Structure formats: C-alpha cells, structure tokens
Length: 414
Image (cartoon, rainbow, N blue to C red):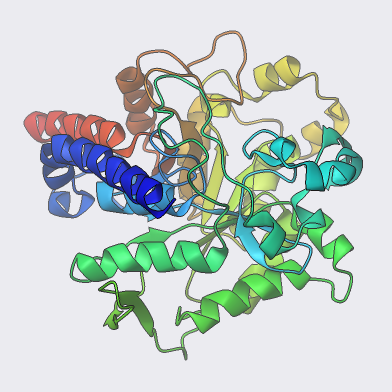
C-alpha cells in the first residue's frame, strides 16, 4: 500500500512539474511586479490582479492542498479558498454546502443515513438541498475519510481524481506559506470567501457571528496582522522535518456575498481589504447600492456578464423577480460600460468572477449574448479595456500570458 501511494505521489509530482516547466516563460515574464512603469486603465495604473479560483481547479481537484500549492507556484497574485464549517465548528475549504458533486461520499455506506433533503439558507433566501449530504453534518475526522473528485470539464486531467481529502483552512494557509517560504518570501496574497455565513451562524447559534469569529481567530493564530497595532508574524515550512522560517504575510482580502457579514468583518479589522461580491442581490447594482458598498468595502466584485450583457439581461435569463419601483428609487441599474468608472469614482476597485480555461465554459452559465466561452483572449481584453482591477481566473498561466500580451500592446502604443 505504501509503495502504491508513493508511486501515485511521484506520478502527480512529475506531471505537475512538467506543466510548470512548460509555463516558466509565462510565469517569469508575466509577473505583475515588473510592469509598474506601464500605465494600465485600472484604478491605480497597475496590471489587474489574478486570483486563482478555488486554487488551480483547471489542473487539480478544487479546494485541495494540491490545487492551492499549484496556483501559488504558477504565480497567482492571490489564491482563493471557499470556507464552510464542519459539525465540530472547524473551517474547511469547500465550495458548496452539499457534498455529492465533488466528493466520493456516495461510495461510503457508513454515511448513507445522512443523505436526504435539507433545508438551508442560500443567497439571501431559504432553499432546499435535494438528495445530498451536507458538510455541516460531518465532523472533520469523518470528512477526512472522503476524497475530492475532479470535475470532468474541458480538458481537466483526471489523474488526480480521489487522491486528496478536503483541506482545512489551516492546511490552506500552510500550503501557501510553504510556497512563499521556498520562494524566498514572495508575498502570495490570499482571498478567502466565507460561504453562506447566515446559515452557518444559525446552526451555531452560540453567537451571532460564530463563523466570522472562527475565521478571524485562525488568521490571528497564523500571524496575519488585522489591525494597525498587529505585528505580522507569518511562518512557512521549509523542509520535510517541519522546520519553519519567518516570511512576509501576504496581502489579505476578505470576500463574500453576504452584506451583513462583510460589514461585520469590516468593523473588526483595519489592514485587510474588504471585497463585496454581488450576484443575486441585484439591487446593489444601482448607484445607491454601490454607494452603500463603498461605505464599508474596498472592492466591488460582480458576475462578469453584468458588464457585458447587462443586469436586465441576466435577470431575465435567471427568471428573477425584481421590484421595479425599488430599482427606480435606487437610481436604476448601471449599464455595462458604467460599472468600472462609477466604482472608481467612489474609490472602489472593481473585480469580476470568473474567467474559465479557454476550453470550457464557467459553470454558472449566462444570458444569450454571453461573452463566456468566446475566445478567452478577447474576453479578457474586453474587461482589461474597461479598466477592471482584478479577476478570478482558472488556468493561471494562460491568464498570465494573456495579461502579458495586453501589457505588451499597451507598451507599444505608448
């Protein structure tokens, strides 16, 4: 058994190293730091930051330690974990409340009695998860008996299917800091998202903001400075014996879709930046809504199609019911070309989600005149032209190469 495990690990390492070596010209020349003297149409004139969505889910099963390490090695400016809570109140990295899509839980008969329909709270309203398992019904020890499945989208390699377990938030931090320590302290940013904090706080009703406090506690315990009086004391593992060294704490952005949760976090910290994500709460995509976001947030991050097909097209595509009078009172929906300049005028940096690998569509889908799935370079160039400040991406080296190509055009046109 040990020999099989070792062979699998060696095979994984060989394939990953091969991919990264092939990408080295992109990784070296596409750094955001070597272009400070060039002017982009972003808020601060610097190249847009690229966030590794779920780590590097193009190559690895999403939200695994391997996915996070690969995204950091590839050169993502920030690496993103989604966070949910276990039954015993531990933050783990996973995109959904339910487990069937991305784990092999269905292959474990000992958990069959936890399968069913479950009442949850998602996107600001009650919902029902049908015929599935919820992470919050499992302890961490139980979750660690499961394996994460790679999604068979595009050309994603399936060699790594069911090799890795669900990672804890602590394991995510350790993975990113390990890469930083071995790269002589390159400050790799992290951009965690609390998934459905209202639901989790309702389950853990011992305090109103249980999930947020657990999140802040993990960050503090790892040395991240959260206020001006905090001294950054991050560490990274440098060898197989677990030896560590001091490293610079990377930049930190708190992102989320739950406005009360984001406002609470903004009140607790002064150093990390706040990013308010908007998709279903379309009332925030009005002048008054964005002005409200600017009162507590540094970023506005929206579904990219709002800046291509427009808010009304997305509402029609989703079949959402919207109070037209309320929209009118809030100033009406901004048009696609208005979002970035309006956000910038309020001091907000503008972000979007998500640019997939060029050989697949994003799972979210979009309206009829969808930008998603067109030539990826043209898609990214469209948002670069707008002056977008950052974006969530998959296949980080491909995104870096396109960013570098755009930057070259800027340089030649100066």
